[in-house]
Length: 214
Ligand SMILES: C[S@@+](CC[C@H](N)C(=O)[O-])C[C@H]1O[C@@H](n2cnc3c(N)ncnc32)[C@H](O)[C@@H]1O
View 1 (cartoon, rainbow, N blue to C red):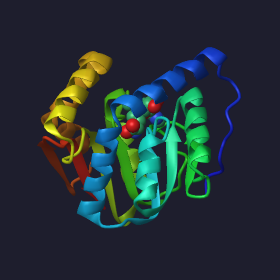
View 2 (view 1 turned 180 degrees about the vertical axis):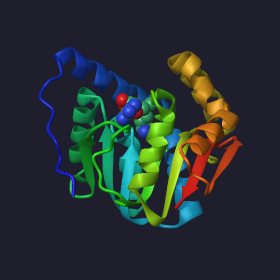
View 3 (view 1 turned 180 degrees about the horizontal axis):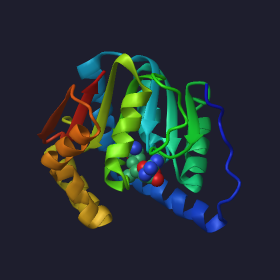
């Protein structure tokens, strides 16, 4: 079982920036987080077992998923200051026994083979330098019989107004990187290159998602 790792070397400026990022997510993207978690529970039932959230940010999504499931969630984040804000958010919610923040890189995850029943990664895919390598890692860490859901989007329960508002905010904040979530062919190619065959891609109003089964 991975231990929680406490980062030491981030600056006050990094922490301020991470808090600003957290505030933006909470103010602007909560409808997408609530909607996507609702969709996951509708599609997969009330999940239990071990979950890894790859690129968890400040754990806002992990917290919402935790509240609607029985999962124990290992929330993986590579930026130390963001990890620290995730840790604070988890503690504030009183969920430290169910969500374990982990400082680490998705390209070399600090988890043993077949560690997780469920892997979620929302809105992190566009950041990965070597997407093929991250998918290999996801598949390695996923248990036989498990499901991984990787992609980005707002879920199917946002209103038209919320959808339009968040889409324009996302385009502004991600710039060119937002294109990653409108390229299903590229996503398919990356997963194929990772040697994974049992997957399907959905690309609709809910976003661009790859569901991987092992
Ligand atoms: C836009 S945020 C999404 C946060 C959260 N998943 C959500 O849905 O709100 C993407 C996060 O992925 C993290 N990230 C990017 N590349 C990563 C990597 N290689 N390993 C771990 N985390 C990574 C970033 O630092 C950032 O916090």
